[in-house]
Image 1 (cartoon, rainbow over the protein chains, first blue to last red):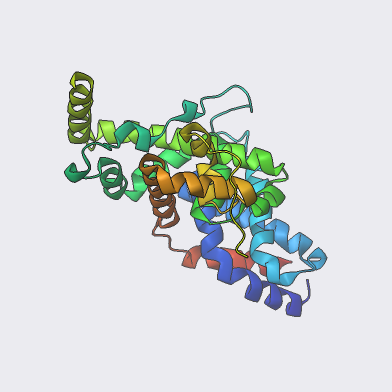
Image 2 (spheres, each protein chain N blue to C red):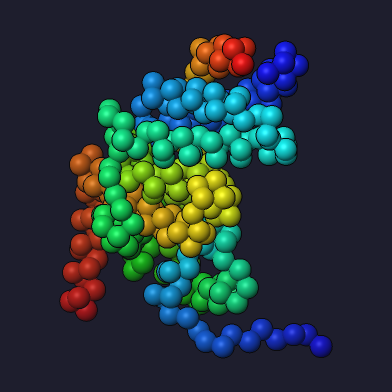
Length: 207
Length: 83
């Protein structure tokens, strides 16, 4: 790179550093690994910068490099909390829904335990649950829910068909909600809600 | 003449639930979207579920990792300067 290119690259890339680091952190769930992933991403971006035609799309270009680096380089690396998985054999939450588990449609005036749970969960608990997802699910959830990208953008970034993206997001959310439910149980956050829920079900079956 | 919306079928809650994620992600379009929105007008349970999924999605969007990237930025600038 010439000095001018280096300066241009810095001007384009550095404003996206926090986003890159946040995405990397949610994918790796370990701060030092997240920094390594960002540095590897930037190194690859430096090598490919001259091939970049649409510089207005640099954020998506960087996220694509980061996603591919995460998948290829970090898949087999020890020390990362990866859960091996294939498209057909894994726990995908089995269609679990926090709403279906906790909502009380016949006791609306008693509050909304499912909403209360979402409000009570700490960032760290949600991040831990994301970190435990199988990596393909995690990547889809982080890009869609945390970074706010569209299905089309995620499909392009991860080189998978859009139907696969849709499936991974649905299964990833289901599994994430299942994990959040178990955390909430462990933390005692849903105990009261369950008691109300169970009583309401009893009431419904008796009448 | 006002064009009447003609829903060929009223979808079930099961079918609606299958469409909720692409709906909140603004991926669902056309007849599939119209059918779901029609269902949500008449089904409180599915409507509430959509609202809940939107809430959870927005919660994830607000995740804060309290990152400090000052040191990382220096490392990144050093990498760039080597190229």
